[in-house]
Length: 287
Image (cartoon, rainbow, N blue to C red; front, side, top):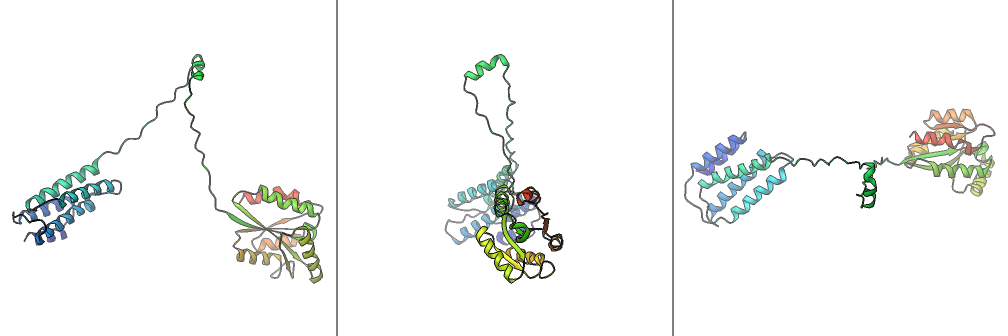
């Protein structure tokens, strides 16, 4: 029977030409009797034809013109819906016609881009006339905006010899950094101090009064595993801060925090914190 021939031919299809040749031969060997619409034979023939049409898409269509060819195939399927009887021989013609139409869609040239006309610059003697007439609207140049992911940065400051030298200067330092920081940098400020129990209590009281928005952390040692550098590193990991910087008046603490991957800035004696704003901003802009 023609149906068996078709399915066997389909399994051996390896190219577009092989597909058309084998399917046409399979249909040619079938009978010429029509199938009445609604009958089981009609449905079987229609199903095979739809398989054939859809197979054309798989064999011919690339990614660029797929939608146009699919619309064409669906149009032919709708035409098939209105067919009252389906003889065998028109199947092959139907397949070849559809194949040709799909090929035409795929080979249709893409529209060429429109090339703008060269801009004409008016001569000086014509500028008076040009200014009196309505000028063409000017198109603003396209501005490229670089979008960068926000970077959380932890700024740690020592209390004794840094924050407590002049609290108003410390407030100005924090305000200026917040105002002048790069837009992609999000700052968090903390006070990291080393002191005993009594001094730690005084430090917390002073910070609560002068800089209430800055949390205070007390370490049991200035350096080493219980020191400032190790503590800031643990805090970074816990808060998912990408970078951290610590300002201190002791060089050994600055070296210690840098050993833990924290950027250290030494605050020299008689140095105002606001004088260090450019130094901190330079580091922030490098992130």
